[in-house]
Length: 369
Ligand code: F6R
Image 1 (cartoon, rainbow, N blue to C red):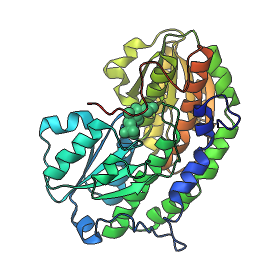
Image 2 (cartoon, rainbow, N blue to C red):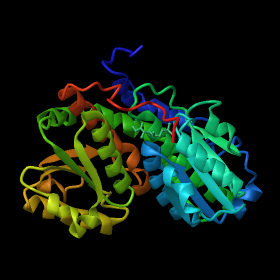
Image 3 (cartoon, rainbow, N blue to C red):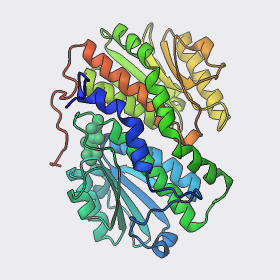
């Protein structure tokens, strides 16, 4: 049932182009508009939404962090993303104009369930993004947008994450469509690029051998740091989470702009630092800033592992290892940038002799708070 792969995780990583395509299927019509009829919250209600709050845990939380950038940019509705386990304890402010999005692969995560119950008690509308039909979280929500990743068996989430991202982009674009905000050329071209993103994920998967080789050389390291900016920041957090879960290594993700506010003190000779570089087109200011971050850490001896868009010649001189990914619109980059980090963590875990599909101390769904 592992389909010829040694681990479910490898199989699920490989299934990502299909999972992404399946999650898009039937949701974009021929004219390039979104048809999310399954989102049973009436357009009239969505037009009145004045705040979006996303709640989730772990990997799903990282998807939610990325969704915040997309929702605010495409719809101009203020959006916050919060760990489900923290949410209700701060007495959050919500009302019937608040749209809460609860993201969960399993649909059974207790922290997320308690957060959405709290939200509904305050009168907020809840939309679930979920991978498991008929599970508790969608049953208790006002509406659900299912991710079509198929069953995810490995404890570490991979294909569910990519499909959560796709679902979040769809919701963001749909809100933009319903409300007519910035509904123009940019949105149309993003929808077009999103509908083709599976091919790009496929391209990334075809070029992973050097990443595996690199991972094997790092098996005796104690620490790996991950840096990113903008949507690359949650990608860095996700890369670090995968490495903790699977390789049992000390791994931390930072917003690259925070380096000089503390974390740069951690940089020492030969420390592996993975840096996710935004597109040099798009938000080029961010790109240039991260290039100087790479220079700074390299000057202090770090071993730089740089994930950058193919053809980005500016970073190559500062990359001890360069991992190239296809060009995408800035906001969609996490769909391709995360894949090498999944492969990296999986290979490191294998090299360290760890059980990839069943990491120690972890359960696939966390049904206690
Ligand atoms: C990470 C991982 C966990 C889950 C988290 C939420 O690889 O699997 O961090 O993402 O426990 O689970 P769901 O999405 O089922 O609510």
